[in-house]
Length: 169
Image (tube, rainbow, N blue to C red):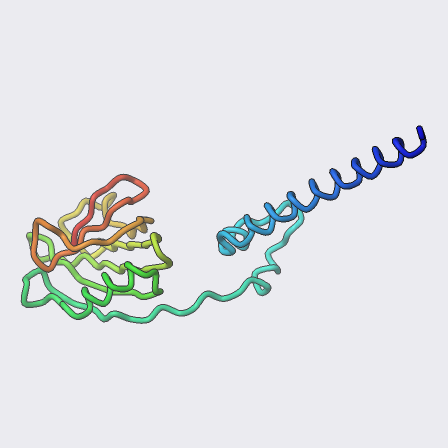
């Protein structure tokens, strides 16, 4: 009888080890499925630059159009609607706008929807002659949302930016 108890104890330990291994495998599989871009963007200790060709290329961006000017007449309302609709479902699109400063200097914006809840805003103010040399730069912000601005008709608010900045274009 002692032998039967010993073998059943070993079986329970083997079952416990198998269940643990399956749980770990399930968690790892789930983690990798969350964001494949993060896995590809983070090199491991043994990886080299040659692995860049192995990662999947993301879909290209569909253009929602562009606009130029700071006045309401210069707004591309269809393009803005396209951008808001894409942000709501996470479709990869991009939209470009040129906003003029008070002095009439151009500031170029590119807004890209990378995925649902992932918005990239690139602002290039190098053409603003009235900005100090240290302030002329290209800045890229990661944000989480786009929404119609309640304060200004036809404008769009960008929210949840990594630096906490509130943007409206």
